[in-house]
Length: 492
Image (cartoon, rainbow, N blue to C red; front, side):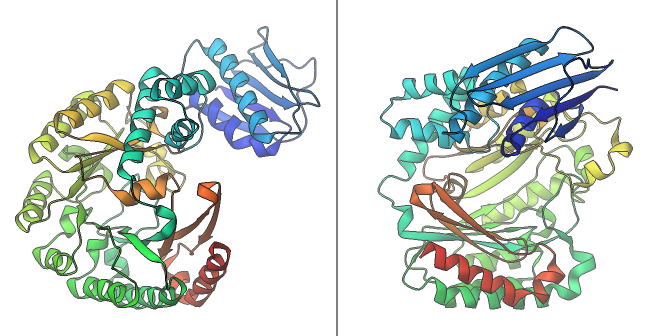
């Protein structure tokens, strides 16, 4: 069994070094040593790989050895104490070139390990570069493939266009978390709770959520509320009366005069009813998300969605019949057992529905997901994603009149790829841009909420977390409110 051992002497760079090594060796067990160093004469045994990433007084260096073969070594002279950001950048450049030589492969995202590559492209454009110069800089500094540098710059320019005439710093956005789901999908690692086991506590949760909303009201007095996003979990697990209570509480306690967008996830078609949609219409929800994830029934059954493809089609038809004119659909690429044929089948069905936006996610299996927890049971199942599949998704989106408007990456993504949102002109989700590019403060209420107080044009972001566990949220609500008050003081 192959094993990688990484030695680093600067713990602050661990995430970037580990993530880059894992991008080249996604299936290999990896161990990080924060101190110490392999002895000069030590040779990796069969199946062992040693990676050394070191910062010394006047240089950074990277070493690689495998199976007792002659090693690869690279170093660069620099002042490693003066500029942490530049030190990390040079170390990653060296490591990428070493791993590229050792494995004979390249990565389309080069040495990028962060989740916001578009933010980097936008920064180059803000420096005065044109599109061609920004693309070239992305490729030169981060070794991006041309397809990804093109995509980043295109999205950065589109975000700039969407935000033109709008000053995010004038206000804030609000995320409202509903942590219940009809069932928990195999890949899910969010703070979600199966409704059948928690049904008796939903009313208590709604009451607590409303208390937190009422507490936030005075904190934001005099500030402009620009967008609201109700997510989860699955917000449509709430009964019509429960949802009406939450939406009424928002309207009674927060200023809606500057509201530009009001989104609600109706993610699971088996939770959508006309009565719930009527509540959304009454409270002027402007954008809905109906999320099939896949149109392959076998996959839906395997991942625990507990609804049919026909349920998706029926729910979508009801949403359109009731007059919602900004509807998003989410897909996940890399689901178990799905390859280019299955994803193509899903995309062909989505194209017939003609949603106003489409978000294509690369499967990210996080630590808390059941798919990881029970990996032995699913050892025979393949998880496939590739540039070919993501390229096919992009082509389908563009034939539907949808263009890319936001992008982000996560840990443990299938194929080390990305998530991309596509939308018709005028239908892009403003909240997604503001949140992902850290253009604006995002307040979050509910269990598992993470408020982000943004200052200095996104250069400083202070996070204030709510506890994830619903029981703890109910018991410690006053503590969550006090946390927000302190965060507000920083923002002010």
